[in-house]
Amino acid sequence: MESGSTAGIASTYLLLVLDAWQDLGMTAEQRQDFLLQHALEEKQLQQPVSRVPLQVLNSLLNEALLAHNPFALAECIGARMKLSMHGYIGFAAMTAQHVAQALQIAEKYVPLRIDHVWLRLERQGDLCHLFVEDHLNLHPLREALLLALVYGFYRMGEMATGKRMFARVDLDFPEPPGLKAMAEATAGALRFQQPCNRFIFQAHYLQYPLLMADPVSCRLAVEHCEKEFQQRVRPSGWMERICARVDEVLSVEQRILALEEVAAQLHLSTRTLKRRLAEHQTTWTLLVESARKRRAALLLEEPSCRIEQVAEQLGYADVANFTRAFKRWTGQTPSAFRSQLR
Image 1 (spheres, rainbow, N blue to C red):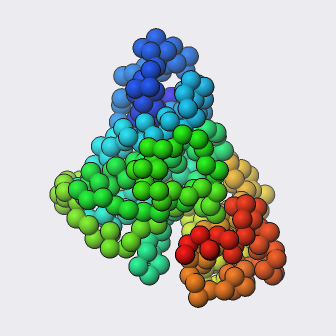
Image 2 (cartoon, rainbow, N blue to C red):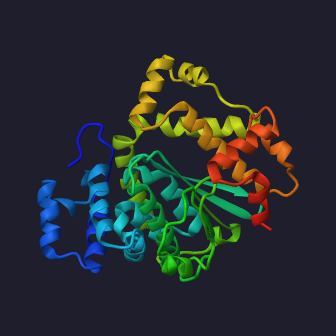
């Protein structure tokens, strides 16, 4: 089980992958061999607060994907995903009054279920952008997790509201093979090699009531989440605060926040801050680049915002530098990306 500073994930997700692989033909012997190899027991994994290192889940995915279509497993995982499997967070979201409250709960408490992953909801006019931010450098874990989230988003949204929710989904990696079922589930709104990972949907979805809304049950579940949040996440919450501050300065002041500024605010030396970022599998350069990607995606959605203005607001010296960076992120120019939106 997880110990120390090892990045971890709720063990229910490991069980989810095991069950999904079993649907695809994994034998009982293979399942038991994997658990023995990593000194795990089914009873341990079923405990509500049990966690396993991310590397263990990545190892399982590597084994499963050797035997199956590279991302058929992600579809199977997404199809099995239910709100209830997310523990108290899922229960709180299920019993929320409406979609907006459910997303607020998910946005705050997702770090309880998996390290180095955050949700961030931004509203822009009639559209909402639910960003999925991560610092996961494990493959195929990262891609499989994001694809499972896509499939699960549609399924869980429909189960919670009783209505089909349509969203455009952007993912920042190349399109893998074998995604027919997922393309059908998302009504063809899945786009790859994008600046960032996000769900884009109509803002009126936020007011959809949930079928199992129960204020008392929701409050009790949130109280349990908050206690765990204070114990587990608060000591390292500085990471989320840094990301939020970088985004705020970029969008409001239209400048890049300096590493030295953040270090001073945290009463740390720049060397110590760099070391802590490395412990979270990231660097200051990557944090700034991630913020620029998210902001670029939002600004390019606005037809009235010229590309020259986008470059300026992102802190680039000129359009040429912005274009080179955007092409490195997505394989296409800002103009080509914008033409896809029409």
